[in-house]
Image (cartoon, rainbow, N blue to C red; front, top):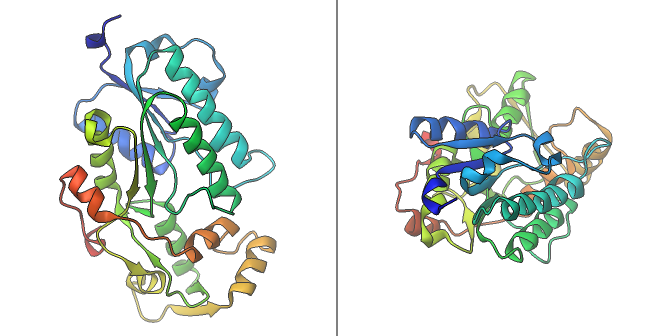
Amino acid sequence: MGKSSKKSIAISGTAGFVGKNLIRFLNHNDVEYVILSRTTFQRTRLPKLSKCFCFVHLVGTGIENVEKSFQEVNVELTKKAIDMCKKSKIKKIIYFSGLGVSKNSTSRYFISKFKAEQIIINSGLNYTIFRPSYIIGKDDYLTKNVQKQIRKNKIVIPGSGKYTIQPISIYDVCKIVYIAIKSKKFSKKIIDLVGPEKISFKQFLINSIPKSSIKIKKISLAEAYVKALTDSKFAYGIEDLNILLGDFQGNHEKLRKMSGIKFKKIRNI
């Protein structure tokens, strides 16, 4: 089959926030795609993939439980994604890692993401690895977390709340993925996927509160970690705390120059 016949994008993880929005974006721009479910990864032959020239691998988990581990989802399924690309002669893979992931990472989640990155880098495929900060839009994880706290009339801030985040609009993320699918500028690159503004987590929460009557409660980091381990209803999990307190900051200017798009400001997301 000639290269000209490969016009589709393979996408995994379409049940997630980013995946759902990316599908809507591709539909709007008349891009052909093939959706891969997790059960698809169990199959040995996938004829539809022969039409694909790029694999956007979005399957991942930030929560471990008895049914899924970071190793099983973030690492092993990445290995299978690479195998599927090679069998179907897909030349490029796009992967979402995490802002702050490195060889020195100590959290189990970040370690699994770094392992996945290394598998992709050593695969021989063309790749773009994005390391996103919080991706914001309707029904994103962080916004839903905040809204849930607002409904309880109390916002909890672990520690000082001075650690920063660099939220990025889901629409901007979809545009960047769309560009990266074909652009050689993004070939064999690891890129911070971050918005134009750095904001403290405390200020982000304050900006999210619709009325001043909502209580804001600071708790010590020690108490936050204990609650994350022992209270299933607590607003933050262990990895949530690790990511927030890591105070990771990305290079937005590099992303802006590579993508050439005008980014949405936080207040406009």
